[in-house]
Length: 109
Length: 114
Image 1 (cartoon, rainbow over the protein chains, first blue to last red):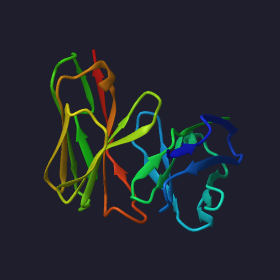
Image 2 (cartoon, each protein chain N blue to C red; image 1 turned 60 degrees about the vertical axis):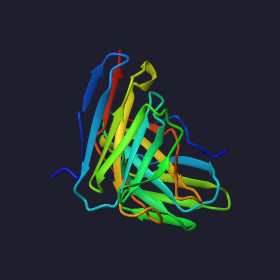
Image 3 (cartoon, helix red, strand yellow; image 1 turned 180 degrees about the horizontal axis):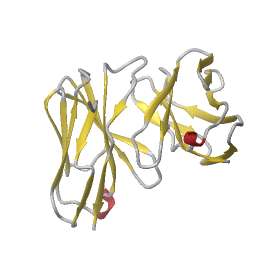
């Protein structure tokens, strides 16, 4: 079966750095997405990786290793507004998105 | 101007009733989706339409019927509501099906079945 694993919850301190990991086992691979979802709101797109390596976008970076079935989302200079759930999703060989359950990130002052 | 709008935002109803959720997007996208997010926060695809044609129809009870009158609209009708249907339903749209297929989500419709 297809599976996306990510930690259920993480806690970090304002101003610090946090890395949220995602491992996947899917039927084929056509890209990996990270979305942010604040409580009670819709998911919003953060990043897309289809080739190995690091994609940087401001305070957020996303890394992909296809051979290891692994990605991480790196958040720097954490702000209170970064408290949210972060969803990892992989597009399989049929171009269907397989979603993880999300990692709830709690930022403490 | 809201990109993907869905109504109603909240829906509380009794078991056995029939209800509809409407969705409209003004992004010019040709693909629209319905997702269900349960209490465990998993996002599960229910249906996907591309240019008004059904392309994804996951294992969803046939009490759920999507309708796409045009590529900017995708409505969801639910018959004979059950307690397990309580969830947040998200409509989404994207341009195309493959590649960097970024989804734009609506704000969600929280359905509570009593």
